[in-house]
Image (cartoon, rainbow, N blue to C red):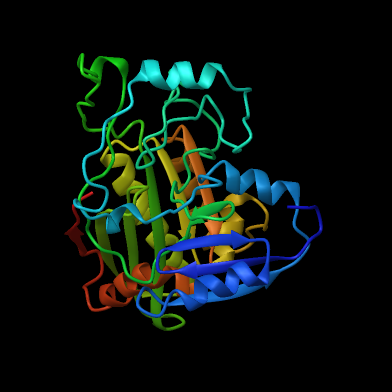
Length: 323
């Protein structure tokens, strides 16, 4: 896609896709009659930065793409696993970036079944290449940053290594250690009045959308901003306690997100203490990223926060998922 050109976004269910033309965009809307509801948006000033961000998180130039949670066992019939030798031989005859736009040494992504024999998954820095590995056809794609409906789903994440392959090339799936997984955290806070009776909520998920836990904490009488911070702290503590080392955080509070990033100054003493606590918790992760999202993309965390208002101060409630 050319720099500065217009582009179109389609959100369909839990996926967001980028299209080059209005025609392609309209085709997706029309095909949504019997499927998930779809909405479309127009953007301008396409940039290389957007392209790099999206291409590192999805699969490009696919003929068809489907959410892994919607796969049926009988959809493709019998499939034969590709061995590492086949992948290596096929890749050796192509350049580092071939004509389909797929890197030969693709980093392993939970849920995407990509493999990089030379990649140290522990790593450091921002969790960029692992972020939301969902795919859609006709262009770059990412998974939506948040879902209005979070469900527990069967696991589709496995750890692949040469030791997991038998002589026939069959993959023996093994659970992925939490230190290699990226935990997704949505947080929110709610207050009936400002200040007023408040609650904090957090939802933790795996990259393929499986809910790990829904958390709620009663806060007593506090402001909405305090409740937002407490929702973030609630989720971070849970992730640390359960061994996650990489985390991507989403919230609809600009104040919390930008103060934690350091973009906005923290002037209120109470906010300073809460921000300081968050930054201290950050040190427990080898990779930490926080993003501000629209309120409607944070609906499940908001629901947990509103439920938490009914809890007594200091009471924490947890609903475990299958992640």
